[in-house]
Image 1 (cartoon, helix red, strand yellow):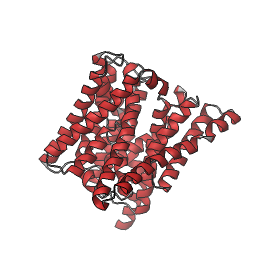
Image 2: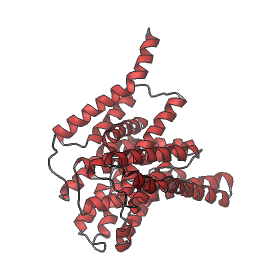
Image 3: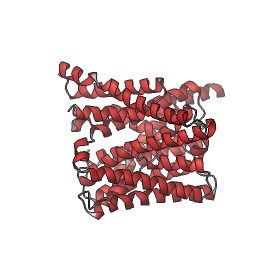
Length: 397
């Protein structure tokens, strides 16, 4: 009888958890004005603390695919909103993104070393901290129907953050492989090859899409369906050849923007499918992290989070004037880049599956920071966009 009850709970556990998380998100957003994703994350954190999270390898692989597919949809939409011509016309935006990413990496690495973390772990923490969560930022911006200078700059810098985080993470993996094998050529080749194949997969899937959609004269629903299937296909392809599905999805979105295949406003978040996958993504990623068990671990999480946000705000404020905005809006752009979690943890999970020996140690070191930023990051992003005056104050229900 107990065994049957356990099997029933295993079957209904995820749907029940997702329903509870959705209800919590609606209550938090409508009643308290808190971003829905904060409630989703809290539900995942609570579930991981109260329930047994052990799964079979098959179930873990399925959950990992769904999480990568969900984040791939957000990265595709983010890439679709990137205006490469704007970055060429105003190169200071690109320069501010690079400077902000490198300063974040340096500050977080320095704090990690000062708190007693080994050099190899500090490098990984610095690389992961560069990434801004595209899922959280896109969700907050879409929920509040944000538009304006701070919103667009934050989205473009988020894409730069994600790209540079992957590059820095590959550098950290290459450094670890260099220490393990002593071969500089092998370490460099592995990092460069993975990046090239990831981008190549995005381009490969994206090449026939413009021709297909124009031949079929697809309406908005058809375009949304094809884009979602393309992201699913690129996720399966990249996982099959063991490269990054996240970078491939971002590349695919940028390519569709270049081919003038537009996502209409009604298609943002990919409709009901996107809503469901976003809910799953935040609950799943939050359930992967564990609350720090010691005061030192909690202090490390808070210091890393504070240093990360401060670095982003300082860098974006410093480049604000030369890039064509006010210092205040520059600082608010940096504050909007506060969300972390999803991209960083899935990137770390991918690296662990690829045989990165430091992944387990890095995961335990960054878990506290992930929890702090899962809850606080979307709030900071919402405050930044509201202070910039780029949100609609009320939703229509």
